[in-house]
Amino acid sequence: MPIRILPAEIVQQIAAGEVVERPASVVKELIENALDAGATRLTVRIRGGGRESIEVVDDGCGIDPSELPLAVAAHATSKIAATSDLDALRTFGFRGEALAAIAGVSHVRIRSRRREAADAAVLESRFGHVDAVRPAAGAAGTAIEVLGLFGNVPARRKFLKSDPAEAARVTEVVTNAALAHPSVGFTLESAGREVFALEPMADLFARALAVFPDVLGSDPLPIAGETEFDGISARVVGLACRPELLRSVSRTQRIFVNGRPITDRSLQHAVREAYRGRAAPNLQPTFVLFIEIDPQGVDVNVHPQKTEVRWRNAAQLHRMIHHAVADALEAHVGTAHGGTLLSTSRANVGRVPMRGADMPTAPRSVGGPVFTPAVRERGSTWSPRGNSTVIESAPAEQLLQAPARAVDVLLVDDTWIVHAGDGGIIITDQHALHERVMFTDLRRRIAAGNMMQQRFLVPLPVAVPPEALGTLESLTPLLQRLSIEALPAGPRSIAIHAFPVFLLERRVDAQAFMAQILADEALARGVESGQIGHAQEAALADVLDMMACKAAVKAGDRLSREEAARLIADGAITDRGTHCPHGRPTSVHIPLADIERRFGRR
Image 1: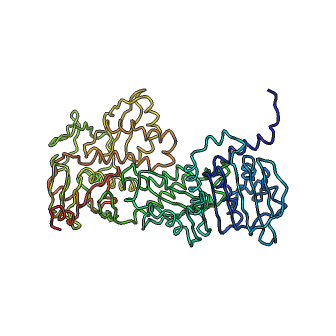
Image 2: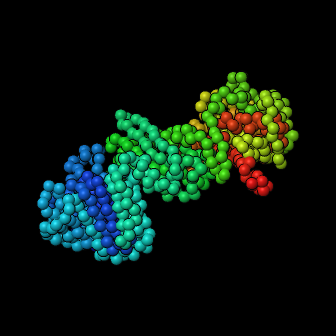
Image 3: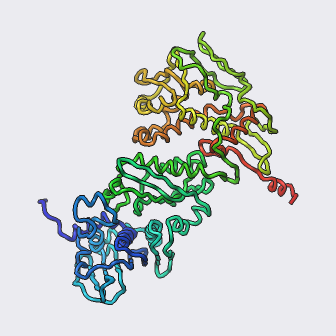
């Protein structure tokens, strides 16, 4: 087949396929044009989910009659004039192809009147065939009707969902626009029924609460943060739900950049990481974040639909979002989860560590003792290998240091610690709470840079699959922060040359621990995708989760009443003490009123 120039009709349909995916895409483009025109009120009307008709009416500046034909012409725009304008975009539209693409696959009627004009003008385009402009009556602003979407492309109409499904997508688009522009009034009507009507509001927070009153809760967490890189400033404000309101779905997660709704998995990941350990890992937070950044720091000219952007410094934005949400969560005192209501505190500085958490005073040694941690059983002790020097530790039956003053506790099945408090009875999972205490202590050690290591006279071999060697190479900087030194020792093995004293004192098997790290598929995927360099803290938290879990007392470990009391005391002053690092609750509070009710006392 010879090379030929495509007919204009085919070109329009190809362009429409990139810009106009469904009725919601049309509504998005028309709303953005109205906002660029300075509209203060917008009305959106749809029928048949938008496939039958779409109408967007605004009170913006309007279009001059002489420019109406250009409005539906390809690559005609008033937003940019030179290439340099792409680096400083402050409008939503700029490609000059949306209306032309819509007009190529539908019957479009545009009625517009500038505020200073006496009459309006109307232009109609039937599937790319433009009629002459004619005078008409109309209010100031612009009204655009889109009839019979994809009428000339029946195959595209077949791929549309049901009318309710398409209407739901339109509702989401209008909702996003309303969230990002609280000073603009929005009304949405579907099949003659008013879906919602939002009056202009004072600020972003008021609009977010008006749109999502149930999922954000009555008292959401305010988010605020800022950063600067390469002379470019960025800041974020928004709202997020409290940890007790997390849900199993993530539909109510919104991110806006300079008023534009975007989809960015990296920034969503930053928010989820801030919630790590505060609730079950399968639950999702609800949040609405508004990012303001210098246009030179973000490229919105990535995709015709403009829902994806490219950041000049994605890692810095990730850190800003993560720290802003984490700070808001840290300021939140009192967390409810599954009927549990306990308080948390950051006042863990200066607490006396639990046994096994004390830092050795000796400097890092070269050629120290060699350990083979035995399988831990009740009453068992460590067994050294050969005639190596052994670091003495407390008897195995004393797992935790006792507090100065004992607290009345009841130990149940060597797993649960029961005591009175907060006007009721508190049941604590000894492993979950000790795991949180260990995790927090490890975080503190990493931040202080004093994770002591023990070098082995004879490196400990670990058999691993060949692909694990690549994972080890990528993880080496992270392992060095944890005082773990491991090197390849062959095509299918590695050798552990040094390991943290903290874990050795807690009877953690170094070989099994390293094998578990290298076998972790999620961590390996993060390494392969480059996330370890991008989100080092997330990878660090994953490994610390493992370390804390291995180091903590287990269900079935027999604690004395004094040790159990010490654990309760340490948990009370440990950050995020209400949940273990995996998100499970550490304690359940049963109010006395509930107990009295069960016994028929009230």
